[in-house]
Length: 71
Image (tube, rainbow, N blue to C red; front, top):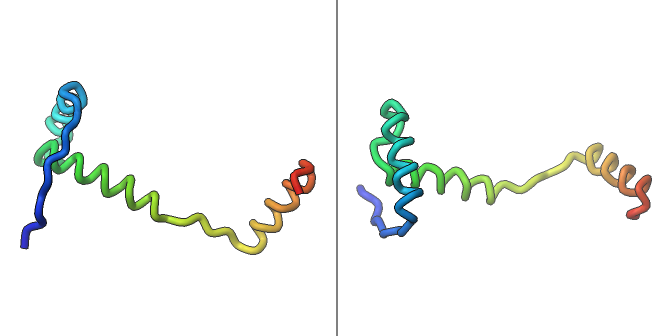
C-alpha cells in the first residue's frame, strides 16, 4: 500500500545540492524525494524525544543552579 504524496517547494539551489548528494550517496537514496523524506523523518522524530533525567542527574543540576545562585 502506497502512502499519499504531496508537493513541497524548495529553492532551485537547495534542490541542486540535494540532487548532487543523492548522486554521490552510492545508492543510499533513489531520488531527492527519498532524501527529503528521510531528513524530515529524522528531524521530526528527534523533536518528539523528550529529555528525561534520572533523580541523581536532576539533583546534580539543582546543585549547580544553587551554586550559581539561580535557585
